[in-house]
Length: 76
Picture 1: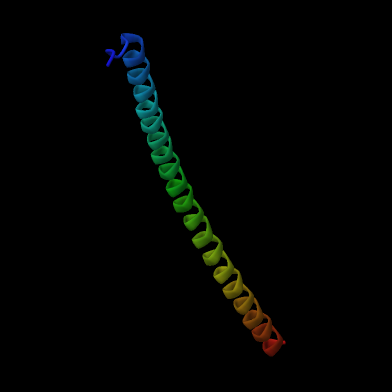
Picture 2 (picture 1 turned 45 degrees about the vertical axis):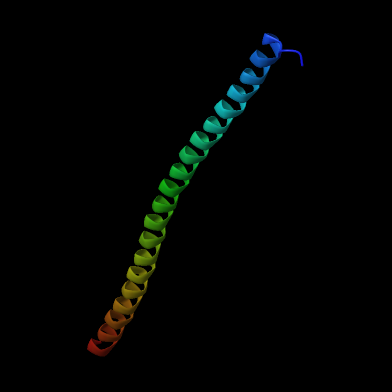
């Protein structure tokens, strides 16, 4: 058997380091992306709640206006 050339060992270690470094980079990027998506989902939920409350208030205003119109008609 011939001893493994030092160049081969360096190449194998370099390849392993590259793979491990790339994997950590992908995981870190994925974690950040997931965090940003969660923050956006929270903002969308708040927005949707506001829209729902606005729709309810608009409906209440319509009912109140209808009642006022009825009272004005009754008074005349």
